[in-house]
Amino acid sequence: MLARLRPTAPMAPAAILVGDPGRALLLAQELLEKPKMSNHARGLWGYTGRTGAGEELTIQATGMGGPSAALVLTDLAKLGVKRVVRVGTCAAFGAEARPGELLLIEAARATAGSAASFGLAAGDTVSPDQPLSERLRVELRTEARAATVASLDTMPVDIAEAVGAAASDMQTLAVLARAGALEIAAAAVLVVAEAEGHERLDDARMDLAAIRAGKAAAKALSNPKVEG
Image 1 (cartoon, rainbow, N blue to C red):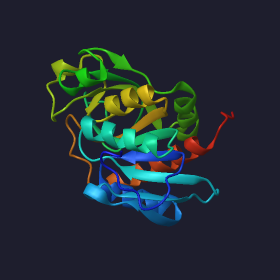
Image 2: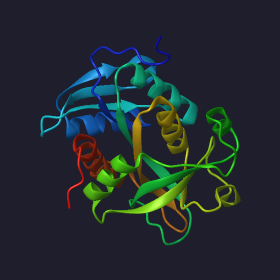
Image 3: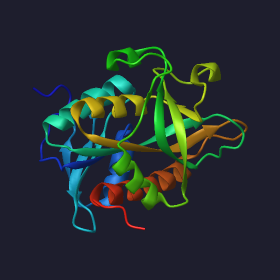
Image 4: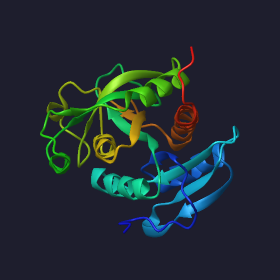
């Protein structure tokens, strides 16, 4: 039985996961030809269609926080999803980070809280699926840098909780950990929404960065081989 989703259309084997339902709509409009809403239950908007290259793709909102993302991913696995890329946002540490920058996640670090439900202690890390992450790296080219993210249950965070991480978010750890348990290939690319010493990214620039990340994710999900 599905916990959160009530699909109204078939799901694709590949999916982009976003926290915000509005961002799911934005990416569906940008990436899919004639997208069909595949879920609207609980405000978790999801869309399925074909990309310009003819590949089936689902874009699904996961809601706020790791537990919600894990539940949605569990439902997606039951609906036949085999590989996912999280396109999300994060808060970066350090003055060198810039709002609008893209981070290709090479590891997600657990902090206290819901990480325990995935069998992880504070400080443990989870890695993305390496072939999928490498395809994502190739598609992003020089637009993103590799980084570790600390995933938390609440924001903002005391930097002391995220030692060794370049940024913090609320979902990447849950997506990667749950995907591993479900035997789903998962990777993540995050938009820096805020950073020390800078104004928070405005909505227009956020949308542009999310579209850049989403286009790379769609190509990585559809491309079975790394070329170049």
